[in-house]
Image (tube, rainbow, N blue to C red; front, side, top):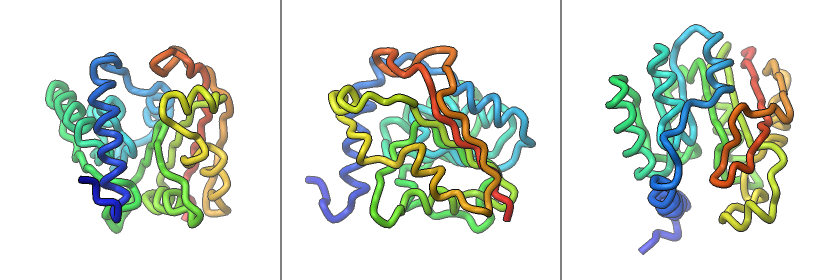
Length: 210
C-alpha cells in the first residue's frame, strides 16, 4: 500500500513502473551532447547528476574524472545505472531520493546537471530552491529541457507539463548571484523520445558567483 503522507513514495512507485517498461524499449543511451560540450570544458571536481535515470550522463562524468553523486527516485533505474557503471569500471554514488529530500553536503557541488528533470512544481518553488542550493560558489548549474513540448502528446504519455518545473521556472529563480547563459531551441543531433518527437532542447547554464 502506498504511503499517501509521503509524496516521495508515490513518486518512486510511479517511476519504478515507468522504468520497468522503458528498460525494454529504450536502447542503451549515449551521454547527452550538451553535457559533453559544457562539462568537457571544466576542470573535473564534484558533480551531482539529478534525475540520472539509467546512468549514461553520470557514468560519462565519472569516466571523465569527476567524483559523481547521482540521484533518482527510481530504484529500478538506479539498478540499471549501477550495472552500467560496473561495466565501465567507474564508481558513482547512487542515491535513491527526491532532490527535495537529498541531504546536501555542506560544500555543495562544482557541477550540478539535470537533463530533462521531472521535478514537481509547487507554490513554494521547493524544487527550484533545492536545485540552486546544491551548487557551490564558483560552481556550474546545467539544466536541459525538451523544447516545444506538445502538451496533449505529453499527457498521452502520462505527463502534464503544468505539474513540473520547466525551463522558464529555472531561469526565473536565477538572480544577481548567477552568471546566466540561456540557449533556446538548440537542435539535437539525434532526436529523443520513444517516438523521436524531441528535436530541440532549451538549455540553461549558470555559474554561481557567490
